[in-house]
Image (cartoon, rainbow, N blue to C red; front, side, top):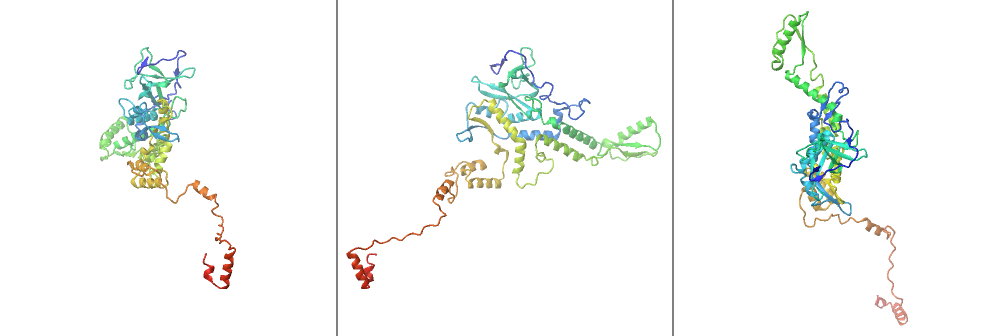
Length: 458
């Protein structure tokens, strides 16, 4: 069987079996959204769960945020620093992963598949050199992981015309490809190493409850915001009379006719039976379901406008929390999957530029740039590029420090000379002692008190 021009074969031996058969890890059904649902034959589909506003908001928020961050090819230098680079073999597929998607939409689909089903399957397309030149995110419902008795991993792919996966010719349900041709990025594997579990598995009940609340609320407001009730009479009434009164009441005083004046006789009395929205704490219950969904996705609730945002003057700590508890593991999963899937040799790797995630305001950028330059951490040209997107200027290519600062090495040399010891008083220079005739001349001048002669040689 050929796929993308390559012959796909499988070693002879026992047939592989689906990983974790019956666990439903790659299926699109949450089998039991609440305790006892299985006995009631109630199942929550992924499509229904996505109709919940919190599930939809968390999924699209995470996917959009990861899609807008630039994915780049980097290389590690001798100092262990990763810097952006170009490679004729690897850069093209990171800029344009396939014929119909940009890199942004490719990453969004990658994350959406992972969040909704717990698994992302990416099919590789190679050229004659064996280099990966295209990547296709597959429909998880058309992929089944297989494991042979000796532990080898394969994937069964059903026909997918968009990803150019052909139909099998041997009567099988799908073609079987080795794990080397599939990039498999999965959420936390709770039941099997090859089967990731979606957050919807945990928040299915909250999503179903939220949908039920919204559905009941829609019915409530379609009834003119009036709760249901009963008509009571002081005495017994026949069934035919009760049905006639019920039909008359529903036709004339419910729906678009709610609020009209009703005239009741024979002691008939209307009494409200259901709880109003205020009495049932509808808003509080709906907020609880949304917060529960956010907890399963690890998204701070205020990010989808549930509740109030923390009282921070600077939004950076809020985004740091969102990044560390939600996005970071997804970024790392994509990077490590691409490094291995593209078979990048050292020193190459892939890396997201997370600076694209947070756009600082002008005042914050100015303070950050000033602190980075003043501490000597970066050069002015590096700060111009990082914080303002500006080009280099003459003289700005080197980090700078103030002149009065000394290196530790220079201070260590200075300390070797004992700078805190008391200095020894300087000895004034002494004149050579006079001898012979010079001594006699000085003695005679002393007795004559000829001071000028005494200081003539001084």
